[in-house]
Length: 426
Image (cartoon, rainbow, N blue to C red; front, side):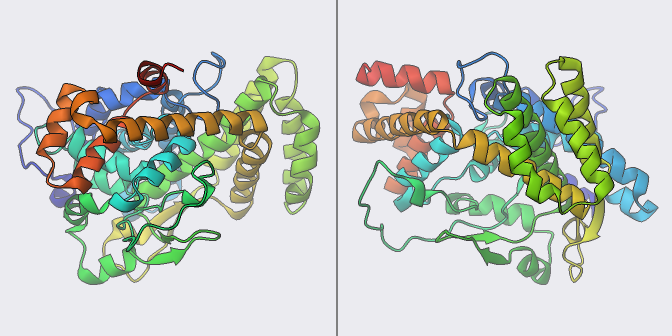
């Protein structure tokens, strides 16, 4: 079964002279050297590019997630049986997943994602994780037809939502194009890429696939969400969440967007539910986090990350499944998961929802809406020549819209700003 998960869709053998790297080392290299990865240096994490030179971008976030991901894997190796230890991804595979996990995010973060989804409602929607799969398996020109041509196991590990986008039978009535809050995307793979999804999941039995692709309703949303992900994806997602919850918290503190009193007020109730010894530890860490002495803050950040990583364990998320790569997942201990969720909520409520952040998001969303309308109105005049060629070769109008969406989603924040200035002059 190992050979099945090491397979590449092109079936081209890795036979360069004297190249003795593992398949996962090759995958990591292909991600690391891709244009899509380099573009992450100029894509928004939370604050907009150019507002400050300290905070994280998508690139630095991905690098930190990769370090945390290998830390999680090493911790699992220490605490697993030999059978489960053999199932774990090696460090190169985990690094490849964490480095690649945000490749599909468009300019301007989740605001840009919602804008593109709004424009693609009648053509299959848009979602950052679905675009990641599209980039690594189709768009990045490492091969002619298969993108980076990553191994099947690497692609499985990138499937945070291993289901297809729902069909929209008719476009909904849209009363206010300035408020896009109702059009956040469904968490799924694009229908146009169903062939990739089928290839990745081909080793699964029909019963395993049925279990793996179960759905659940999303709260306050018209969409459903997939309930399960593979083992490697679960570790990658934990690394992503820890990097987001802890390191974006550090950015907020250093840049003055979060004050100590806000920390105390927000965490008092959720932390009161924890063991008293853990409450005391978090109280001490809170004092260090907001200390004017930088080395104390860095020590607190490292201690928080360590507390979370060292609580990780494996469990059977789908015990009825035969394939171990989907039967097992990783999770944090209950207290540590509660801490992480509190940190994520804190960043969201006290930073992301700040009016100045949301005002910037509103402006950037509308820039992408206007860019999409411009390219859609006259693609053979305004699109770059190589994108024009893809647009002309597209099979139908839906595929042509996907080409325009691919082009805009691949822009960096800076490039999108300059393109908007070029086309509209303001």
